[in-house]
Image (cartoon, rainbow, N blue to C red; front, side, top):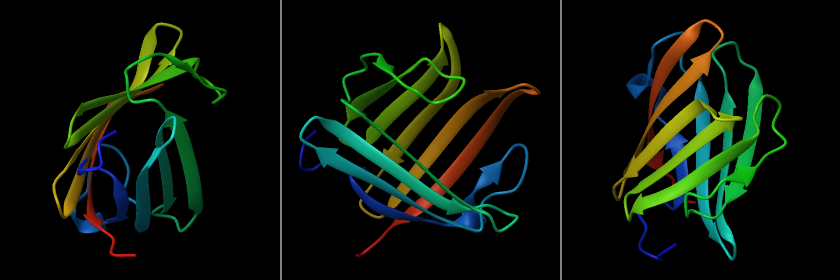
Length: 134
């Protein structure tokens, strides 16, 4: 990664700006993207619309290479640095892509668009985060 990558940092969800094709956006959330010695670490914490807390995280080099995962229902994932503002990821079950996300950041905002394959069919999520000043 490069020190000037705009997507690096800690971000706070703006629920009012989120668009969920199915379901409701979370009540709150934080999204952290950190540069590490061997890749990028992403950690996400949120409180869903019913008030239940969740956490998830993953780590991979941002070179687009397949990374094995022990996440149930997935076999591997990829993380790709597109440019200093854009970071993509995808998750797969064998050769079937079950999730794709594009993160696009500027100095103050991070927008994330996700396409997820569910048993009921595909769905899209759009989220907006504001940079945290921790």
